[in-house]
Image (tube, rainbow, N blue to C red; front, side):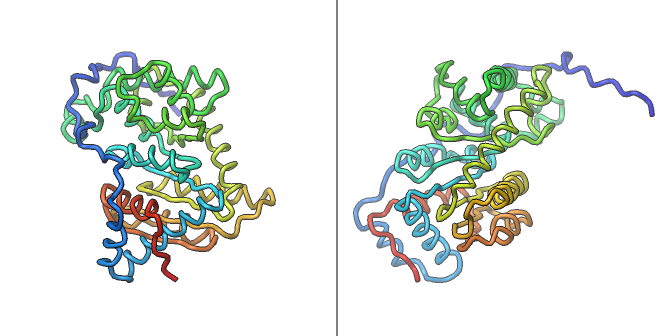
Amino acid sequence: MNDLDPVPLEKLKTYALADRPSLVSEAEFATPRLPPPGAVQALLETMPDIYGARSLRRLAAALRVSQQSSAPILWGMGGHFLKVGLTPLLRDLMDRGFVQGVALNGAGAIHDVELAMIGATSEDVADSLKDGSFGMARETADFVNHAVRKGAAKGLGFGESVGTAILDASLPHRQLSLFAAAVERDLPATVHVTMGADIVHMHASADGAAIGQASLLDFRRFAGLVTQMQKGAYLNIGSAVTLPEVFLKAVSIARNLGHELNEFTTANLDQLPHYRPRVNVLQRPAGGQAYDLRGHHEILIPLLRWLVLAEEPEVVE
């Protein structure tokens, strides 16, 4: 076989993040307000007790049971969760005891950093791909890659490295960062990277050894969370491949090590049906209650939060 030299990434043409048009910004994001007394019950009374409405009500009730039992509630998310402005709601749920761990793919870390930097994120992929400018924002790649390299040298995981770097740099919009919030609250936030799938991997600053070390540590920490998930819950939100695969392996590790893991809630929330969330999150783990909810994150998550935080949410038997 002929040797093939690696592409010379040092020659890439980059641009300033501030010069890139972004599709979403802080002004459009959710706000963690609560409904007035009686509003949630009135909403429930308008909903039928059928299919998705029933699943939403039962999931909310199950999360309250887990929280009251001090059992962990774990949230696994694709980057789209952050792009549609839901970070403020999850930060609020952290403070209310409904989040004991979050797991994201590599795209989640990228959007989180951009939001913390400029209060906006998400480029027009189709348009920027035409001239090869897709993913070429300097500050995004430099910040993420430097944070992970520095954190890995200190024995930190990927998520903790990013959250710590955001706080240390006092990024101007750090209140929008899920990773910074997790570090501040001493909650695990893990990142599960597919090498070559994220824009920061296109830059010469990417250090494969550091990325691999930090992300593998995060996988092992996530598996540790799953070992404690008896009577708890795992929500897969918008991850079609990566997080369902990670969750399945973590369940196997937990049971292999002898941890009791036969009674817990799983849920998949996504706009479209996908194979791996259905089988790896809802069917194969066989832990008890499993809910499949179809819809836009920006609608389902605020609804779920309202139902979870209602004083006396209706429990459907």
